Image 1 (cartoon, rainbow, N blue to C red):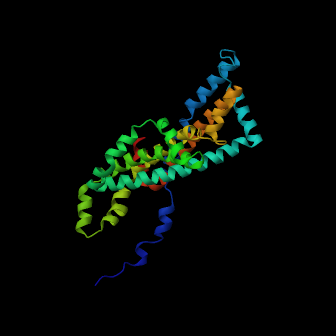
Image 2: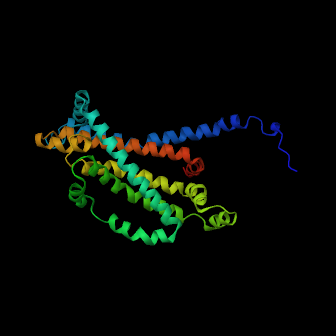
Length: 285
């Protein structure tokens, strides 16, 4: 006969778990400083760029200064064009990432767990991965028209492969002895996939997600060439007729900032989902 442990043995366990030790706070501050140090080189390059333009080493016809680029972005913001373009691009990128990333995740888990799945479609995906992205744009226009569908599907196509490859690698690197032990204890294949394999493969999956979100932003430029009237990709291409290099550079700079912001969000989510992985990285630093 078993007896429940007295409650006094584990006093206020939840409260204790929520408290941070001085060492943990110091580690978080150190990591925050390391993240801030990543901005030193980009800010230094901006300062050099501005100095070269201010002292006449670079002609405005060749390259506008950062001050002029920021002025163009402020102009677009006040007119409402920039916000409208960001919203349109965010919707397309999010929809494409969810479709492509979700499909890549499922295909990666299935192919990683079962040889049948790998034999069925891995070769086809490897062939499609090598097809130039811009080459399929005319086909997508013929097949899906010129509305939102080809734009979203182009982004989805670009997002499938990073998630698939990293998920497949993460699943295959799970220790097979753990899976054998789970099978001996009578766990179903679905339970093994969701409760054992997926958590152990999560670090590799997060790498694929991080890369796929960056690819989604990059593919916007190509996707928004398809009869687009809004979006940051369209905004980067449209001003060429009027030679507004400040707007073009502003959109390029905006892409860079968005990429950094997306990467920061993924890194933050990864540190929340994988606290043990974060501790390993802290020791490495």
